[in-house]
Length: 602
Image 1 (cartoon, rainbow, N blue to C red):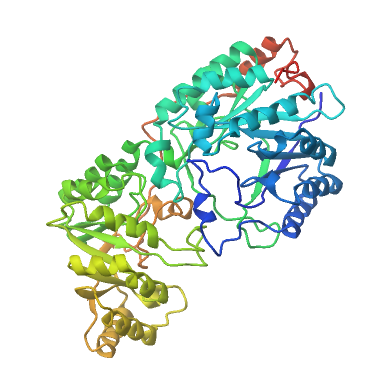
Image 2 (cartoon, rainbow, N blue to C red; image 1 turned 60 degrees about the horizontal axis):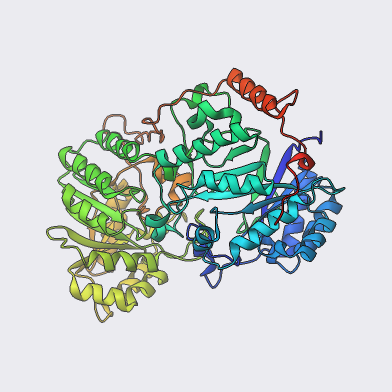
């Protein structure tokens, strides 16, 4: 049996792709004029060299679509010449369907192939990827790979499928098709939400229980037929009764994101989104290799409970005005529940912050009103090169916020107030000048909130000149806000006694101040989760415990409503034996690539 690899380096080669998947989390980056669409050949080689120097023996090229790069074959060859024992590719299969190009890729050193197929037929797959003929090309690529089994250069082949509303009822059919082609490893992952695909959430999003039921059914089929299902972004404990149908092999893995601008080896601090733990995680044998549940799949009950617990820790007598950020993943019912909890807890002034992209979309505003919110704060973010958020680094949320304003116009917001929060910078001025925002000011009594310029982390510079210039430009707008208010929650002594009076005098009293907002501290302020939402106001300052005067402790996100049994070492051993017995092997290890089924007919 071929030796298993030990360490895999995944290198994202860029966001260019010839498919247009409805669930793609990268699509937002492709529309940014200044965003680097392809990582340079030199940078990719540098990253692969870093991998060799740090003990990685497999490199996996991902995208976008790596195979459409003009230098794709050169990169594969370079990886093999560096010493990588295996060179893997994640692909939609369009280009590799060409037998001549496929042969060149194998000759260059390609050893493993993961082909993305999202349906059992052309109708389902082509609709999901918005590319006519894509299914036929992907199937042809799988056929090309399976034909190498029994040759001197067999390719490992697996499929990769995103489970979404369009195919969740068809996973068994998909598995049957893939099995007939000769595939013996099938990877399934749920559609993951990001800023890029919030608008398509209604099309892609599937409840966790339906996802688990569908994949569990495919795993049962795997147990019967002798292939394996591999999970991605899902914890195995959800499938404890079908473990022998799962591939649970884990290995060390590191990723260079396509946007990483640091030197090779300085990997990104955070992923696109974070994961949450389940109650069973602490006692699970896989806790070191399994990250838990993807936060976008977290039950609404657990999200709402997390917010309610945070609200309960704040004394409403000391903090009358409460801002609620981070509800971007919540549906309307959960939002209304959280707002209602805040009102019942005694917060007479409860505002919901909205950044433009959210699961609830228009229903966000209806839910806020039903819950008893006193106001909506629309949160603007401009370009921020210091942000860990990949979109925020290159583009703000202007278009998302304009869409939210369009939705807001269709909802009777009275008696809620409407406010807009920005920084006092050029990006905000450009946003305020947009025709849509000018109309917004004309039609609504809007308060313009400003972030405190000196709380941006540059050493306490008041930036009075910048603030005055910004104020003058706002006042010269054809249509402007009803009033301008600088927000500085929980001001420190020097702010209250020096900074704010000085600003008031310098601006001739044209700026008012609001020192009372308390921004609800939740786990969504953590960088692992905050990349999801635009609604974080980023006002600076911390919420302190009234008794200890220490920052309030933020409880971790835990999916408490999901009750599973932890995976034990014995359960893993039993699953391995069952799988081995099914294949007639002495152990539960998967078969060699050249034993993965007879060559199929196209």
